[in-house]
Image 1 (cartoon, rainbow, N blue to C red):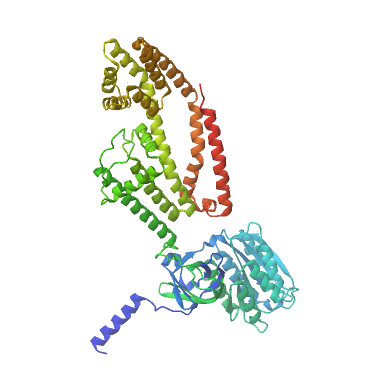
Image 2: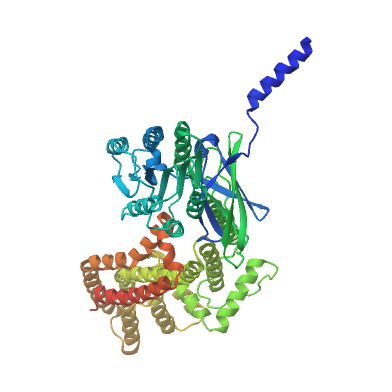
Length: 626
């Protein structure tokens, strides 16, 4: 051979050694169970041969072909610690000698290979079945029971499997149960029939892995019927020396089980091909599924797991992140539009209860405000909204407030609808106007209380100005210059209205109605009486100021005494909503039935009624009158 050929040959050998063996489809997956209960999501549990390796550690992928069309799939390793195994060993007369000795050795190796936390029960059977080691995790007692087995008698195979089912069906049984059988012949002594036993194992969903020692008395058809109906596999052993390898194969498949999940688009009886591939080796199988008759609605399908993980590509997580990102972008767009409008808007003219004129319809924000003002004007509420905005001290026009509420409701509806449920979206959309109304009224109430608190000092300034020889109008101008907000703002408006020709008493009455202060109404009445009958207005204002000051002290004392009750009322009212928000973030599956089922909607309605009644009751308790 020339040097060039030798070099090429060495290069080919090196390349083959680096690339590894070619992919092979000779290995066979064992279908343990199928579940179409979550249709269109279909779950197929398969047992992977040991030659393929561990998919959870080697970056295995799953491929599903449904009706000739490929479907995205996800593969998840099932923990071996959740297993429960019933080991059934044939001890009939045909097993005397070397077969039983080899079976004992192979069975002991099988039990040793299982995780220590896996419960195992051992059943031996000849003419009758016997539980030689009840269900437990005591490996020492199980190995001793296997060593003590003796052969003799006929073969009660079906009765032994029924006994194994009774051992597996325990109240604290694990999530995955299976039976492992070693036998060398057909049944000759059972009271149960083949069909009844196969149906019982299928109903119990207990897969049967059968190791068949080939003899003249073997019954392959019966074992095939039992394993195919329950979801399992027959592993043949040509002679007793092959039992160890057969049990090793079964142990690998019992421990290495994986759930392959995919989104189905078929209906009725459908052939599905499942393939698991790892390290250049693959195993495959075909299963016929009976899917619901109605075709499913298309939706996000499970994605393949990332290398080295099990189910890392869960499409539901991707969908959640996509919805969050989309909602964030929508919110950012609305916020940007609001900021641009706020920077370019003109200040609100206080004291004007009508919509502004000369709207530039070329600007989108002006159009929105014009539409909002039109709606309020038709309903006769623009003056009321303008007054409450003035009392709250907010530099907003009625149309701006209505437009902002509409935009916030639309945003909350979209986010709640897509992230949680349609009902949540509707609730959040309704909470926006309710919350805006509550905020405006809270601000107005705080401003009103602040005005009432400043009233005694205001009356003292007026009385001092009158004693200094100034008129009442000059005293009001002094208050507008020297008092704090909101008193200064309201008296400044009173001065402007008077200069514009409005009657002084009418302006005082309008101020009292606007600030909704009972104490200031007394002041207005005192001024009206003095204007009609005469008298020392400064002394009258001093008396009124003293009375107002005493009432304020009593009011503050009552507020301090009822503070604990009011705080408790707030906690009790907010607690249900806080818990709902917390549960929706930490454990959404737990709270999901509450917003997605008829019973949940009824409970929410009852809770809303009880919450409203409790809120009114608490308000009556913690709001004393004097």
